[in-house]
Length: 230
Image 1: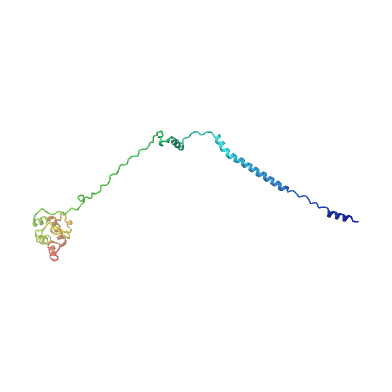
Image 2: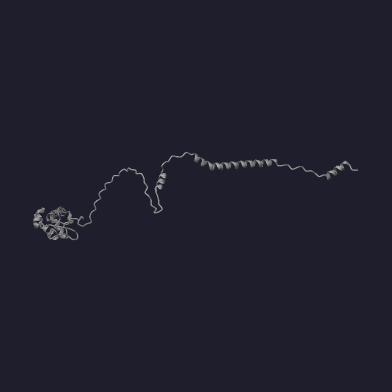
């Protein structure tokens, strides 16, 4: 005879053990359903927004009142382009008719040209040249010339000696190398007041030169004897 305890253990070993039914993930299902709802709402909003973006400009353009015609540079150019007619035969372009208009332009005064400076001619006849020597042609004699120059008659012998050595009493005598001129060969010839080739002017200058440099014509004579120039 078995005891109740043994029976219970036997039954427990024979009878199948029932496990608890699995739990359904309620929270996960709820979350998925919410996400689907949000995504669907955004998708519907996007479709509506896209449709509005396409239809709205057309509706606004249809609803916008017409704008009055305004002439602009572009519209005028387009109108001029429409005025050109080209035929299929010879590509003839008809002239376009355009309105006339006046433009006021302030007149600009014409400047008066300044006279051009005169240019010296290269012609040799117009070029400046220093005057040449004025040679003596008046005639006369040594005594007359010495008297007219204010030389004392007592000095004429000294004067005659020096002038005879210098020029031979030729009023137009000229030294080819130094340019000394006249009876006493004044050097330079330009220092003689008047004309160096005039015998009176030449002797008048020589009278002052002899007395100023040598004290007298006698002193000038002595210097010339010793040096052969004065």
